[in-house]
Image (cartoon, rainbow, N blue to C red; front, top):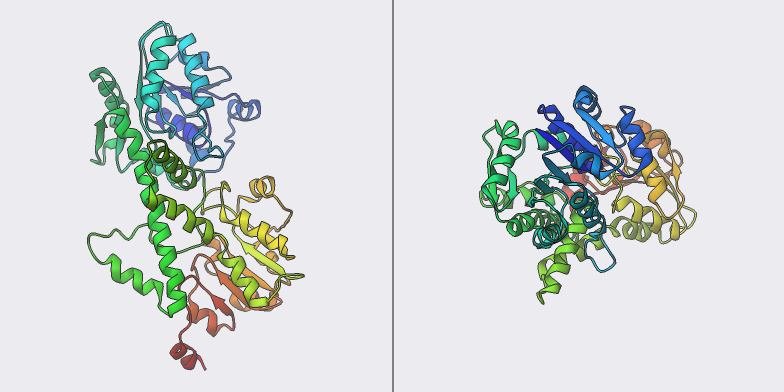
Length: 440
């Protein structure tokens, strides 16, 4: 099948590569000349494990163009994967989407299936269908196909999905989309066909529910710190109930990225437009913003003042295995620390360039985790990259000015850190009095 993909950001490029890997001919479009130039030279402009190798393996089935019409005139199905960024009121900016739809209507000379792959506000398909009906000279059917890709595992998620969700109106669209995704469902996982509005809502429901789970365990961890409970034991206890899935129930310093924050706020805004306050989601958003301040507040309480202190950060991306720092807790953390008078040194395996571009204050970027802690008064664990999990504790202690660690991702064992001579604070975990007595 000949497939057009408009937009070669995270979602669009992964889709392009995976469809090409399934044997389809893919025509991708991007208006960014720098990004387009890299793609045309066979270079991948973003970091995602495994993507570069699969990209190069399938280059013969991919072509990259600057204009929407270049893909539309060559394709049977056109995927729209352009950005829908958050605006000040929480709503999604659909400017790019409708600009693309306008170009598709102008270029199409035969019937097309146009698939909204980006996350779009609930009700967009209806509006987009009306727009195309009014502006196109041929039949265009709008289909929804929300993505459920986890950054850091996007290829696996696309090639072997948990499920595929399709929102469409006709048997023709159902048949084409079924054929398109059939190679990816050899693992027996389902494809769900539904109306467009339900498909749009499914995407928001999934991300918002996961965001609420994260908020819930983070609140429990804060309470555990107050009461002396161990959040790991609490988690084991309540998720042993078969009705409660343990996934995404890990405490930390808040979620970030391009999906959860934007989608939660977009759904809140959609509810407000319908005169409905989505109270649970509003609370989840507030909890998450508060969570990003926890480490700074605890560090400030520990020292009394951060003026003149040197603070080391391990991790800048919002999660491991990605260079994405959009809404990353690290950015707020660095800004708050600098505003309180601290010098910040930070290291991340891949996200330093993006963090440098996105952070509103200056920080010292280091070339290694150990370089970061040289002379540091405290170390903050911000992103749980695997390389941070097993440091040389003796070297770490001797390199730091003070052996003080605030672990925002609970990657270390509190008892082990205490035994190694560190003053250690996790999220909802602490060394108990009986453990201290045993160590002494």
